[in-house]
Image (cartoon, rainbow, N blue to C red; front, side, top):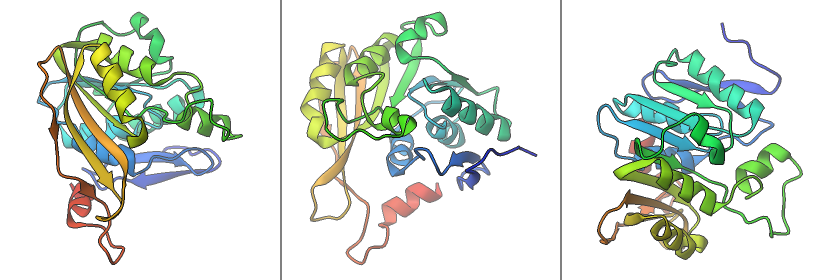
Length: 244
């Protein structure tokens, strides 16, 4: 039986019996990670990298939803990476998921350039110039560009991807122009974007974006993803995402 540390719990992901270890005192995964994993279109036998994997939620969900060959989750924080590795072991999927406790900028010692089919990332979204920095270091690194900024994640993603490899990211709409500029600077062509809104009459609070390395320009703006009905219940699409 898996030994849990103080503050930890095991959460059932409702996906092929998969589970994940969470720590209530740290930054637990949210809906953004679930939506990103669902947004990714992974073909059979693909090799994937998740930049800034945190507790390993995206690799575990991608494994559960797809028939991929291997996914590498890169996580800088030692304790968080260790917890992600224990979640992988808990599910007996070490053959398919490998957690690397490194900075994303140091990937060259472990992973091949221009090799991977897909790169996925849910990077920190608040610049360190902001006045509000979490006193909890683990939470701060998850939310703030303390150890890596948006450009680092996009640049690393581009270097890892093979020609015509796919790049998926969830981010905040207020930095959309910066996202698109950086993607194009590093030869990732934005191909699809979907705005996520809490309710139909509210402004988006998330964006899901897909890019393809060295592709021709052509951007499709998909219909918004609405999270809640007027009565506060999840929409049918959100329920379907969580149950698939």
